[in-house]
Image (cartoon, rainbow, N blue to C red):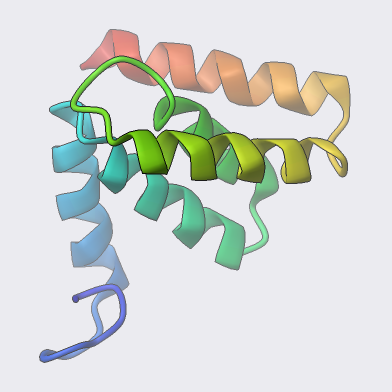
Length: 98
């Protein structure tokens, strides 16, 4: 709602804060939303990182996993192997920091 301004003033920074908090508790829907935010900003490495996180262990929604895998495949077509490795490394580090 905050990310889209539905029922309230749009506040992407606050939405991101809440999505990150939910993602840190294993909610892959929040990780998926963070990925979409990064993709809209054309930060494709960041988007891949969050899509990667949304496919991992936690409070998993199978529909989100399927959507994330498709998004990762689409992004990978335009990323180098180094960028993909970088995104996966960032995902690993994010998990370790939680």
